[in-house]
Image (cartoon, rainbow, N blue to C red; front, side, top):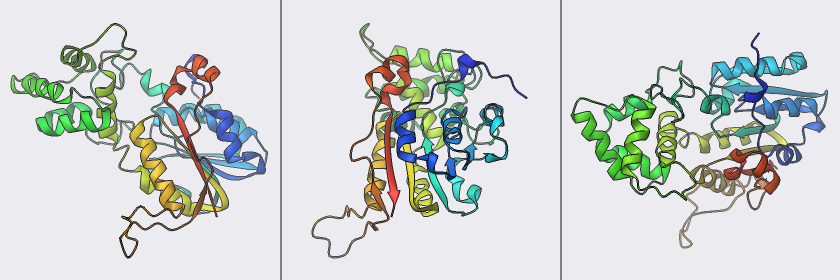
Length: 313
């Protein structure tokens, strides 16, 4: 068994708002597709003795820690080491009553001194949410891609307007036989590339680190398919709730929900719908739910969180 440091068990964002939408007190089978340290799952299981949960996470360390946290619920909690994109295989195509996905990087990962997610620690530039996957690390990505490809990733996923300058300096180092391999090396390079004013709220390296993390884990590429698969798994009146922390993620969730609610996105003069819009759900959140001022003050991580939900009809 693992000892869980209470200080490292982060408070799950938008907890009460998520529970209000999922209604786990009604009982049934719920899926926490991004289990993390089990904060949301703990409360879902506590809502009713008739509620069961399947928790999915690709981070084996997080899975073990969540397993200890949820051990008191016994066989009502089933934890699976996998990516949320494989939800159909994990659930084995069984119908479920509710699904939750919190798409933010976990506090466990950000606070790790060895995983390379944060520029607060000097570590190998890894950034894989599943370090046992054998997939390409961030450092390997920067060694392989062209200057234009690196710039496009930083601009598209990080919305960093100095992306080309950053990419040029990454390539200059690589051409000198000094590829960027650690978090401190990348953070220092970005700081020297991006103008920074004392009043700026975020570190200049934040957007670049975010962009590389998204690219390494293909975080945007799997969201739409995950939503389609999740809706197909839901029972009638089942609820899918998704929390995002990035504008591009939120846009994908919003547009996919709209398509599944039957809203056609084809040009007005298109004689036949080509976007595949078919009404399968009712959208429960016309606008994204955001954290209250109190929660934002108590948990700064919640400031960028947006919650959207839909109900299968």
